[in-house]
Length: 263
Image (cartoon, rainbow, N blue to C red; front, side):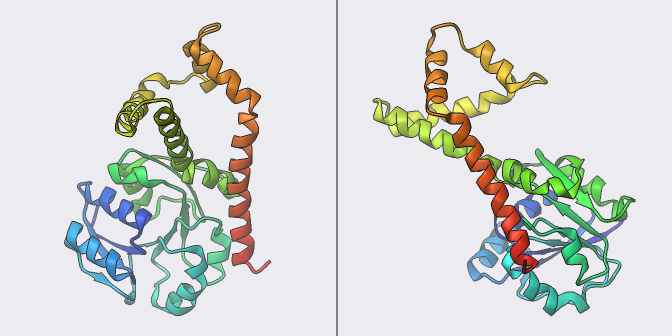
């Protein structure tokens, strides 16, 4: 890959995860970093030894990755759209913000991603949708260095945001509740955390191409401890609890989109 300018605007959790994952790769990227929060700037300087600016310069080529908050997008585009050359590929990870909305401000090629923080270790999964056909600037090839990538219709991104972008929080919240329960039942918090951490590490070895429900059936035995726990979940309407959480996240993504579009 020829030398490529890579601009990241917003260096919070996801922006810094991109930076970490990309710096793990053997590539010819020249990073240009932009952030307003002083504490975040100092953290990035300490970890990566890169300069960080408060405002973007004129961007004539390369990739511009937007990791800002959706509510800040309008101000950013109003302030900076004339600084961005039409040759620049705009990449967005903003929940609820459609490519068509950004296209109202700029005439650039746009790709929308919905990764999560696992990209920092180069083992993520990255759903994407784009407004162009070719692999412009070989960005998809670069992106595949952060994990596996799959293209989806943009209309599916609200639910993808809910189950994948927010997905780690669902599993970690459940893990937190398991630790809390184990502590109430007599284990120390440190031992509970250790055991659940080991459990999470072991799960990939159990998951293959089989349906999750089939794997559960293989784990539980008639009248055993697992079945007793599953029956308790079902009697407490666990399926409804999960659906309501995923639906709430999906609806929030839709709401963000409407707020951005002033609907």
